[in-house]
Amino acid sequence: MDTLNQPSRSPDTEAGAGVEPDDRLQIKNYSIESLRERLPQLGIEPYRADQIAGWLYGKGVEDPDRMTDLSNHVRGLLRDEWETRALHTEKVARSEDGTVKAVLRAHDGELIESVLIPEPGRTTLCISTQVGCPLACSFCATGALGFRRNLSTAEIVDQVCRMREVLESGAEPTTRHDGNPITNIVFMGMGEPLLNLSSVLETIRLLVHPKAFGMAPRRVTVSTVGVVPRIEPLLRAAPVNLAVSLHATRDEVRDQLVPLNRRFPIRVLLDELRQLDCVTPRRPVFFEYTLIAGINDSLADARRLVELLEGIPSKLNLIPMNPHSDSPHGPPDDAAVDRFLREVAGRGLFVSLRRSRGPDIDAACGQLALRQVSEPVVAPHRAEA
Ligand code: SAH
Image (cartoon, rainbow, N blue to C red):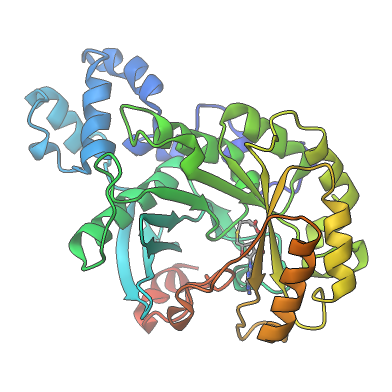
């Protein structure tokens, strides 16, 4: 695993439960357990950690002065010693279809995007795990940005807090689930979650912790292009849904679309999934297959796809490619999408078509590249670079 092309600042290579030395003052880098251990060193009872988490994650209150059941001493610490917000909401764009995209700024000026997708009965939040992405998938706009750094746990978690705030201040219809207007979380924003695994796992622990966000693990989905040695550690650590970006049925094609395929070819990836005993019909793998005209949309592809997935409890998500200016490719026409869908469904695969959400604000899959935002938004990190 050490030989994976890890960014030098990856928390994966550093000690500590998701707490990076530089970010120690971000309270959202702490798991509730590590906060319970830390507080007594400051003369505070461990159970205060649960209260702090209740305010930050349960109630969405980040101003220590409003945490009324905390002593003045604890409130003072939160004010003076720790940051309770890791991100600043720089810009919010609302799509005609109700999708909301926000550009969020980290303390070092780096910008990331998160997307809220309200639907009847649920509201899904799509969050980022890296600034840019190192994997350079040829049809993905985030890949074209290149890679800048991993996000800390606090920065991943804070996307949930900032977007809940956006949701509560806006006009979006919300479906509440145990008091949280965000019902589902997908790690499908900018970056490759499995290349920032320790922070992703710390985030998941806070999402499902009853004293924090209290979400059911089945409402959380992590998507990967297939960093094979990290799939099992993810699923062992947390019973979340796994989504795998497959996109091709032959290595020659997948090598071009997803360069990581040269490292972990289709067979290796699928064999790994096939032998995982935590993958079951009740807990299938969600395969994402972006349909690209003339590249991977033939009927032969549809047939090969069904054969390849045999023996893996699967659900297939077809995503007609969302076009963007960095790619010469585009989606097949509706008839070709329909043909592909019927072919795989006819062979017994459970398949659904993912409708593009928020394309008018560049919020759809593969379009997160800090576009459709006014000029000054991109300026801060350019100026510092
Ligand atoms: N790096 C992870 C997490 C990002 S998920 C992964 O790739 O799985 C984003 C999903 O959108 C992936 O399935 C990705 O392949 C897909 N995608 C990227 N560009 C796209 C585009 N232009 N149109 C449709 N889907 C795209």
